[in-house]
Image (tube, rainbow, N blue to C red; front, side):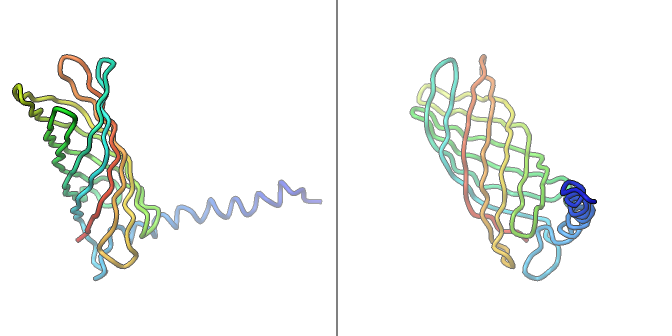
Length: 180
């Protein structure tokens, strides 16, 4: 007589067998525009709060960032170039970032990603300007409006910059994106 464990094994095996096919099918519609041709570009704009931590001190502020993204390897690798303007108490920072992003296309609506790349930050203060170098780690997702080329980009980022000592930044950003 079959046990409940053995009966549950059959549907589980069927799901595992179907999942790779579903992932391949989802890849066929990645970044698809309303005109049904594959789109390789995304432009957008995001903004949100930012917290900075360094040597036991912290500061709160905000950031705005326009960006451009391009597919390098369809469904596997994307590159994003962005310029972020950040303001913190007595500082303004203009940062230039390049991220290599790994997309995880769940379906046509939800497209999560993880990214890593270098950052160059120009610190503008009343006492003078400095340049900092570091790395940015990002995780987020695009949420596309079904057949539309428009969507939302929601992202959390961690940046570590070096200026004689590490400076840590944690930011949350959200904004609009358009694919073409």
